[in-house]
Amino acid sequence: MTKSCPICGKGRNPVWRLKKLRGKYNPTVKRQQRPNLQWLHPTAQLAQKLGLQPGQRIRVCTKCLKATSK
Picture (cartoon, rainbow, N blue to C red):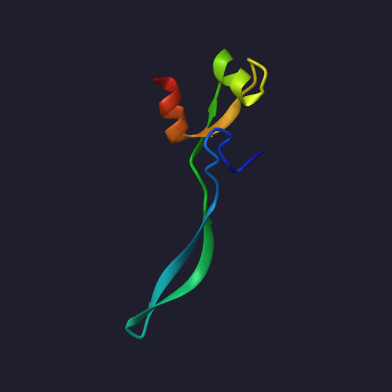
């Protein structure tokens, strides 16, 4: 299972959580933000462009999902 979108390549993004300590903010916890991936049955044209078979499902980000549905 991939953690990135095969269409646009959007992947994980490092983020530091800030915690207030003695009146100042410290970047204490480093974590990963992941893209919102949803299942999609691609059309024949999109599947051919990505090198997939027509009935195969892929996980794409919601921005690409919205763009392909139009």
